[in-house]
Image (cartoon, rainbow, N blue to C red):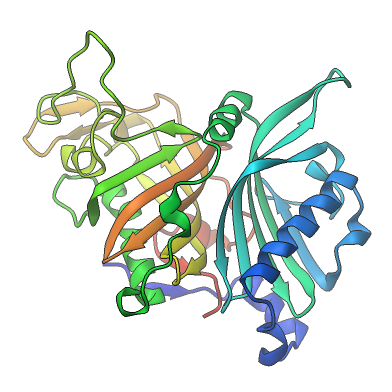
Length: 342
């Protein structure tokens, strides 16, 4: 089991430099934090950075690149989307969002849909950090929009007597990454019986078997199937080609609702890493033939020491890239990085 790493990276150094006292930094409740998201997105739509009060040293990244506030998506966003999945961390004064949006198209009369992940760090009455991912995949954005609203379990309040500690929630969520990276079929896979995963609006587990087809057998298939359960996929050992899951930055925890939000990279290093043995001894070659990295925003519903629901947006990024918030060493590490500052 990996120990939780308390990261002293740029985000935490920023807080130290601002000299904001703890009482001032803890004034924003759930509604307040989520209100900052709308205030920010409205400013982006209007391309008006002056509409968002910023700390003196506010930092902004988009798709891992540090930009001037007012650049990037600020120049192209047209409107907010209706699908909104928050992870709101009041103690850490951070809020994250998975949503859709609309950007300019080449034809000024048209807009094009995209997926969007956002993290804001609130310091007193100002925004201190802005981190966002724009996944420019109109089909994926359409699938997410068609979902209408997030699964109801994401907004369910967990009774106080059954709530997990922050550290236990982080450890449980991180077992997903560790179990996939070390996918030998014998790891600690804390999935509930009703666990489900959605990626870019598509059913990545428990998908219906198409008419006229037979459900693949996890014990004999040569590749993992989206028709399998969360547990079947991991016990198959067929995810082993995801050979490195790194820069595991856990940025928001909502103990009241049992939610954990992370930014992470999945590497497929190609070459010899594509060939591996399944738990029953078969030799399999799978995964991308060239080096490939997924940049991912992924959240987990964690309850009773189990992962019940997983939702992610992802896109291909330059192989081995950094988040823009980590040191080189942290960017390559597979340690659990708690960057909430708590």
